[in-house]
Structure formats: structure tokens, C-alpha cells
Length: 201
Image 1 (cartoon, rainbow, N blue to C red):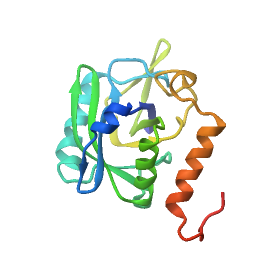
Image 2 (cartoon, one colour):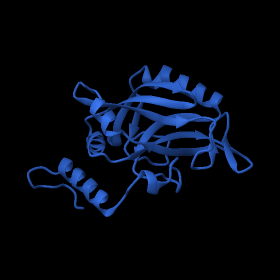
Image 3 (cartoon, rainbow, N blue to C red):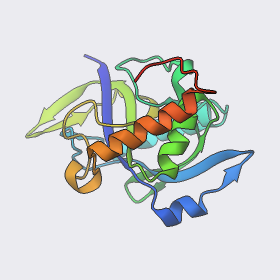
């Protein structure tokens, strides 16, 4: 039976990567690893290379070629990409060994502006694939089956399933109260104008 499959890994830009990131048409462009094939991930799932290759080619020939490879900032367990939450558009995608790499344009939407500021302030976020498919247990691993359909990649603060980060959270995300305070400051700065704020934190 098909279900929504969500798998998350870290997407971190070093200060050097951020300084070298291009701004195209006023929008930040970043590159990084989106997903890995043939490796058991933090959710205990393995994506066979041939299945991901098929879906990557379909994604390149469809959404990327048609300039609609959109993703959200945080995502629901849904097949629908909610346009009001869109933060980015994937411009290119390629393989580096078993890693799926991507070039991503951060859009000047409310969610995209938040994502841009998070990157500029050195916040590590997760990049999370969203797709539909079924799983087959093989030992301690859940193998993604041939009916898998890739929907998009989203940026998320934490994985939807505990342990979905490839690296331990305490080594890769230093989520102290100061980090949360800074995130709230960034969001408030973006959403609030002239002392009038449409939301309360």
C-alpha cells in the first residue's frame, strides 16, 4: 500500500559556501546534497539506486525543465505542494556517486525570506524528500519499492520522524535556547513592520 514517505538529512552551508553562494536576480542560490541511494537512512529506509535514477530523470524532464520544481519550508504529510508555503525552486540536479546533489534558488516569498535569513545566520536545517510509495521489510531495513513517486524536497527544522537526520542531532544541530531565540528574532524581523506585527510569538 502506498504511503507518504518523508526522509530528512542535514543541509548545512559552511561560511565559505555561503560566501561563495551566488545571488541571481536578487535570489540566493545554494548547492548541496538532497538524498543518498543504497544506504540505510535515519528512518531505516533504503532507496535503491535504479528507483531514484528513474525518479530523478522524471523530475529533471518535468518539474525542473518546466521551472516548477518547488518545495516548502516545513512540510505536511501530503501529496500537495502548498503554494503559500513555497520557499525554493530546484534549478538543477545531478549525481555525485550515490548522492543526489541539487542547485536550489531560494525564492523571495515569506517562507523563502525566512529560509534565506536562516542560512545567512548559520542555522543548520534539514532537507527532506517527500514521495509516495510502499515499503518492503528486508532484515532491519525498509526498502523503498518500485511504485515510489518523488514529489519534492522541502526544507525542515527537524525530521518528521525522530532520528531522521543522517548525523546525530547533538553533533550537527546545536539547538540551544539561544538558537531558538535567534530564529524567533529573524522571523519577527521579516514578518513585522513599523512595530505592527500580524502574529504573536
